[in-house]
Amino acid sequence: MLASTHSAASEPAETLTVMGGGLVGCLLALYLARHGHSVEVFERRPDLRGSTTVEARSINLALSDRGWRALEGVGIAEAVREVAIPMRGRMMHDAAGQLTFQPYGQAGQAIYSVSRAGLNRRMLDLVEQEPNVRVQFNQRCQHVDVRRRQLELRDETTRETRTVPYQRLFGADGAYSAVRAALQRTDRFNYSQHYLDYGYKELTIEAGPDGSWALEKNALHIWPRGQYMMIALPNLDGSFNCTLYFPYEGPNSFAALQTPAQVRAFFAEHFADALPLMPALETEFFANPTSSLVTVRCFPWTYADDVLLLGDASHAIVPFYGQGMNAGFEDCTVLAELLDRHGNNWEALLREFETSRKPDADAMADLAVYNFHEMRDRVADPRFLLQKKIEGK
Ligand code: FAD
Image (cartoon, rainbow, N blue to C red):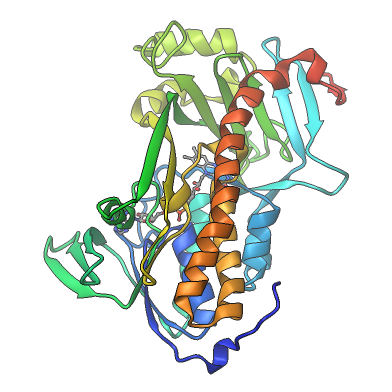
């Protein structure tokens, strides 16, 4: 922790507005509340704790050290650890079904598989226990007037629109942020977005009949195939969440797989050892959406001393480095340290936040794209395999 020059307790509390009750928005609300502020969170979706539809696509995320540190900062790491599965390395599946294990680090070191929905639900529980945080669901931000400091919110259930003033606004509303869209209309705001020619699709490896894991549980499984790949992360119930990263166009691509028979034949040829473990393959392949992969860069991340973008809203990255959420969580750790040091001197705080975090976010974005090439291609290169070979499972 950085040395504290301001006592947060001596500063007058403010009412702060957080747009987005996702992973970063929830953690941010906890940090701001623990610094004595009242926090109002607006979330576009319904409360996912009461909804089964919201959770229909429950993907898993890899939680690493920078994420754990951020969770520890508000005392919720232990609760999350109970539902996290350590992955001690990559398990490579070659085309012949041969397995090779590549450890991530020294003995005991791991990254952790956590359910996005489970983590978000847990964090909403904790947020709701804070007396000075209020979360309002089904509230879509349609527009932000940064000069008047006003939000236009649409209630997704009644379809009514209202204007709400804010004192200070934190945009944690993800890669397609409405708060960022408002900053994009201000002078000298730099913005770029870049899509890969690849999309991704979520699929499932089922648990064995006795509820056990059909593949090694404590590993991140990868089927690298040069121009594309599939990965799988373990779930607590014995199943695995798979993600197929695949070109949109070309001979082996989403465009080329148009029928259930084509999908089955493709998997039989390229992912033969996984296919018998995926009984719902064809159904899922056509029912689940094909989603795109975007990198967003922008700067500044602030407007005056009353708007700040965090998480994917300021730095959305492709998922191959497993660091998007972790970097967003680290935003919260850094912001908390600056709150300790600067108290309510928001101008100094926001300037230091954006100038110190931006180079890290850019480096992460570059590494994420680099790691795509490594994961789909280089990890299968025999020269890269210095790890122990495992015959069969
Ligand atoms: P989000 O999670 O997108 O949350 C934004 C919230 O704001 C949502 O709840 C949304 O409903 C709400 N919202 C959006 N617009 C509005 C609006 N107009 N009004 C009100 N509310 C709004 N990261 C990792 O660290 N490890 C991984 O292994 C990993 N794997 C990934 C795999 C895939 C396939 C993908 C796509 C991403 C992965 N990531 C991973 C990245 C991670 O998902 C994101 O970085 C993380 O979710 C960002 O959190 P966030 O809270 O900033 O944004």
